[in-house]
Image (tube, rainbow, N blue to C red):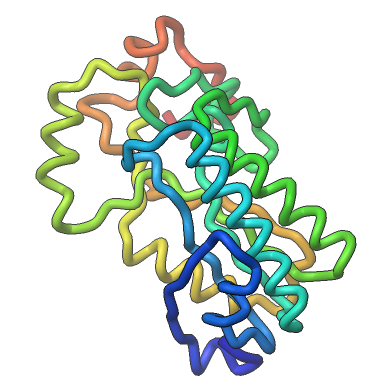
Amino acid sequence: SNNDAPDSTGFTSGDQITVAAHAEVRHLTGYEADLGALDLAIPAKPEEFMRVNAMGTWNALQAAHECGATRYVQCSSVAATGCGDAGSQRPHYLPMDEVHPMEPIHPYGVSKRVGETMARSFSRDHRLEVVVFRPVLVLFPEAVAQVAEEIRTTTDRRMFCYVTVEDAARAFRQALELEDAAYEVFFLSAADSNAPGDTLDVLTERFGAPPHLRKPHLY
């Protein structure tokens, strides 16, 4: 989109893999919100997560810089912390905040962590304003029944957090409307959880010990 992004936001799709492809499908004179990625739900080899997500993010950043964009909105993931997906590590504390340790193990989470490091470097070196979002499970209406069944039957270690697709989309729109954003990082999550019971009880059961609570009154 362009310098009037809040009033003329557009969407286009294209290849993540080359800088030229980014430049061809994006007319970047002011802003870019990049949602291209290989999702964790897609069966893929470890090297594919890195090729598409990490290299694709670099290409998007480079194209944004070369095309004169002034702001870049990046879709990272809570998985960049090592928490939040199936087989998740136990969080160091709750509620998690944006300075929580980043300790991903799965190639998807590693690729997202690498992408954040790349975006931070562009904000320093090229003065590109960067807003990074770390969404949890983005819940589409048509997936509610499936997710509810998975939650009812799963014994996986997971965080049981979600954000509706409407709220996620609203966040990306608002990121384009921020007045100042040298480099900002935000989690995207609903205020409640989709845990099959009390959140703290479920997490204690799944992780074998209760997480450290920094704000006990929330739980």
